Amino acid sequence: MKLKKMEISERVVQRLTEYLSILKEARKQDNEINSIELAKIMNTTSAQVRKDLSTFGEFGVRGKGYDIDNLIEIITKILGIDKINHVIIAGHGKMGEMISSNLDVLGEGFKIVGIFDKDKNKIGKTTANNLIVQDIQNVDEFIKNMKKEFNIKIDTAILAVVKEQAQIAAEGLVKNGICAILNMTTYKLELNEKVRVVDMDISAKLQELNFWRLNNTN
Image (cartoon, rainbow, N blue to C red; front, side, top):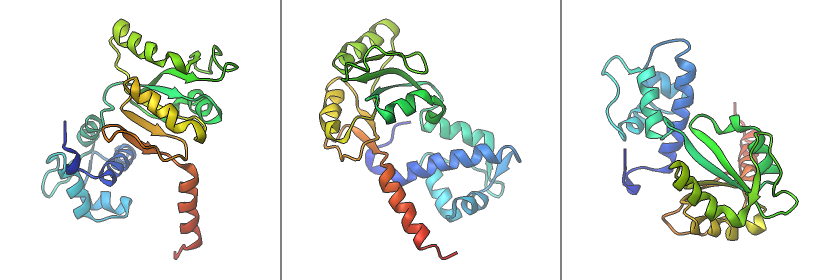
């Protein structure tokens, strides 16, 4: 399913991932769920739930709600995780190593196929999941070989370098065909508008959390 950029907001996609998580838990108890029930768990309105889902099509039955298994399958396909998406990690410091040694944090639909760093002391070492850390200068050759030998297209990367190297590292990845980056650094990347970047700034999230802790009115 292809949607024009202006047809959907980032927040809708974020909620879509939340719906998926809720549905997976809900199916342990029932086969169906309606927008009111989803809205209550999400702390939103049933109108918002229906609006979000209707962005991608009409999946519910009026007066009955949604078949949970069917909706899970639909959202999984919309998010593109009904198949394996191959990802590389750029940077194998503490953050990169944490991810590579705990691949369950990636969830379903994603597989790390390459890890890269520029540190000579890390290059050549085997990770916890039997991947060898490679020289970042070889990422172009690696991506080309994966396509040629295994017909595997790699266009997604997790950026886990130090902040000072983030922009240069990201530009290098884009030059070699990467068009989607999960940015684990605190640096705000400036890249071609065709390159999609999602920032995962733990510090910012903790600041946000701290605000709600201090202003908890419950």
